[in-house]
Image 1: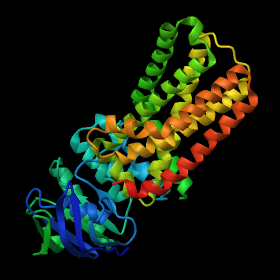
Image 2 (image 1 turned 180 degrees about the vertical axis):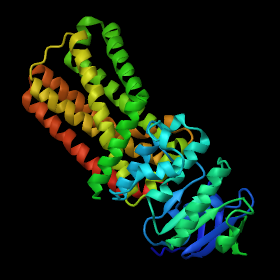
Image 3 (image 1 turned 135 degrees about the vertical axis):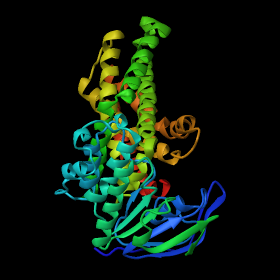
Length: 199
Length: 222
């Protein structure tokens, strides 16, 4: 499972304001860390890679349909964690996905059938991140995956990312955390005022 | 998975979420019920049961119900950015549109049935052609979601979405409103050919706007 994604000279304009300015990035198998100050355009870079924002200029190439998990849970309220994950797996045609095991691994075995609006922010985040185990896509885009998580949750994220790297997935992580994942990173990108450069 | 399978999956997801928190359905049922009740009071028992008046008020109520249910559905999807998770999936944009159209159609059928039964009993309506009336109601209900969901998608990231969706929808829905009202009135009075003609027009509206929505929605959703 070898994934890749790239943006070439990509510009994204939101509310008449260029949020991404001529960004060119090549993501291959391995971990890419994206850092930068608040408002630098990190989330927009991920959303551009995921195809969630229109490019005013430039082009995007991604192998397969990336798995994008934003800094919010992206789970539908009214449904349980299990129902949400079943929906995503079915949509991607993964009939044999072991959702029960994924939720158990993320510490949600007892809460799997509770509506997600009745979970804490950290539990919702865990449920969202359990998609890493259920939908193993060539390209994975994670926006602040450590936010809202306790120490044990952060270890689970790190383990899940390492497992993805073993499977040769291309993993892009936006994070403010300085110490997590640094030693596993194949590429580090710094964003500032909508521009991206390698460090 | 086929495009139809994905659309059905999104529709099922919508209906499960609505079943868990039926605020959209409850608001729509309350609104349509109140409108039928108020109609009987405002027009008086004699005028309120005239086929053209009863049909017109009924379809205005169903139209507003469609806006209410659709607004609640998109509100739910915008919470926690749940809609982005669907859009990011392969074929997600088409499935989101088609699934929401199907789910809204199913919910509106419930609302239309409840409002219809209430109208029949409260206004003591005589139905000359029940089969034709059912056909007009079915096609009239199916003609609404393609437009309402389309305008909801166009106004998805607009701050005043609650106001913008009706403003965008209503001009496009005037032909459906006229056809549904006239068709229902014709079925109530016993004019079979006219009822069938209006029903055919409603079917055409549903098809045209459904295709139009599927064509432009992938580009419209951000």
